[in-house]
Image 1 (tube, one colour):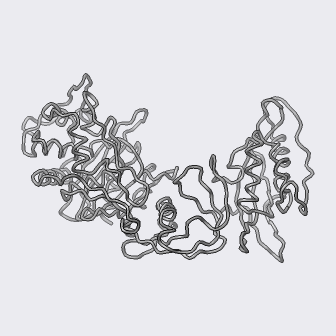
Image 2: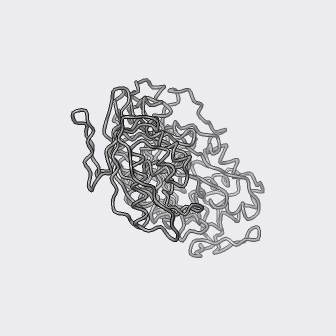
Length: 542
């Protein structure tokens, strides 16, 4: 909560101490109620041209005075959406149970007026002060010519989005105490990027894991299956203990690693079990791109393409691989990064380690099956089987493709979309030869089904693929990032994904060391080893 406004209950009277002069301290009552001090501010008159700062200040005063006095209709009529404003202001009092409010404006910034709120939330005998800062903008009414508050939900509270509202009372789901694999509590203060995951865990498992709800003020989301966001705890509930597969030490390393880059995400998985060890994002929008994102994975996808080619007998690690600077397929030219090529004696393992696009595209004709890549992804790597990890997640999309689209798919471009969760799982499958569906909460807690791949990887394919990933980590495009990773049994793959309209490609990197596999993606982060590589290396060295 914003520290600009402070409130306290003293001797049964709510006092608001704020910078500047408050417009008044009122008990919020409905328009027909009594007992509250009434507002007497006059409504602003008509005008023309751009709204002035003086008009913005007068309009803000009239609106805030009417709101503080509980005159919802009068306040709403000072906005450009009276119906929505009146419903929101009534809900502020009747659904959020917020009363005894003081609104204190700051100096107008053009037509925008910031203001501080000091109020009290009370429900079921529990009461706590609520303080925060918000702002409103004044616009000229299109037909009336009057200066009016441009109505947005954020006027009521800055964290409110379209269709959302404040609610207070016993929460629909009791609180949960999420713990890691060793019983250590996963605190969102220490692990801030876990907050959306922890909110989902509470929403999904709060009623199943036991516990008793208390009383809270929260934001009710507009979309179904979206976690509620708690703003204030009025009375503590009794949380239930919820065990997860996360590892607090790996999570801490992941949080620190992604903090170095904007729009970065990473997931770590234990290949022997499929347990998710860490999920971290560093994003302004709070989106869990690590598990819900859908972006082209670039050359990290060559792990699956290589497995498919060797599975179909169209390639082998020690077979010659022609790697030219450019190749055309389906009427479209494809080239290698910076236009490199390899000597005529290079083998497929070297083409993989150096990430030669043309070597992979040249093998499309030998496969002669437009659906081969999608089949390999589904049957061996479990992609597209609707993973139920315990929180919301997306397990990738591999549409069948022909012509130039098929060539793009071979190198992880075109219509293929993945996220760090799916690429970490691909690496875990390559590490062991067996797909184990990633999980964050044990399925026996709620009996949800776990996806199983149709078949394991052929032993010969698994052996060659692991060797190719080790070669990539030792002397290929991943060598620099993996040089400092501890352990001798380690492998990796880099990826750069071109995105229309972006000035720089997405940076992708995936690797394993021992029984930990991790994948990272940094939007517009450059080439594979540039940004995503150091993130994965830091997680593997947890």
